[in-house]
Length: 148
Image (cartoon, rainbow, N blue to C red; front, side, top):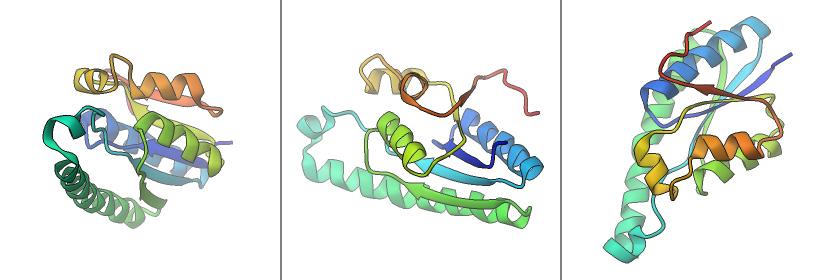
């Protein structure tokens, strides 16, 4: 039975659907949800704008996503869902896989990659990396994925 569900969250429409699916699964199995965000910043950005600017961008991203994740957490808790959130400072694909493995998650739910993400990751994608490297099942939300 699926008890521990990790949702890779980026504030996009697919991630929002992933939260709804995770909520339903957790509700049906008396499980728990963890919302995970890891900033997607291209490696070359340091050379373009400088290290201090990259640091500032990361800090602002953390502040923004902390607020977003807290709001989702509060909403899910009001609905009786056990939920936590975490912001990871690692390349997103690796961060998601490593955290899921370390914390023994039963399922990862995430949106399919967008074009910007593929460019940033060097024509790969976070969702593809997670699919290839995760030891637990991965549910990919596409534009047409229905909430059960």
